[in-house]
Image (cartoon, rainbow, N blue to C red; front, side, top):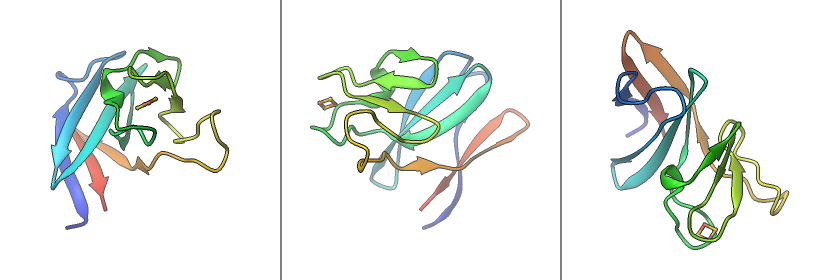
Length: 102
Ligand code: FES
């Protein structure tokens, strides 16, 4: 069901950290980039790698399986201009991180 879902707290997701969250059968990857929270689809579109486990540089996460890279704020990847990782709106209320789920 679409709506805002609490997926983490600011305490759990400090700057530079990532978290994988399962909700309603879908995997989300949350990132704290210098205090700004991003949420994207957590499954790499290449072969299903866990994006929340990949190293982050700037706003770019590298899939830990075969190295595809994605901007976690836009979903864009230099691999293929037509390919875009789903990005979800995020809202912070107090300590709670809410993600707009489809
Ligand atoms: S599964 Fe992510 S790059 Fe292959």
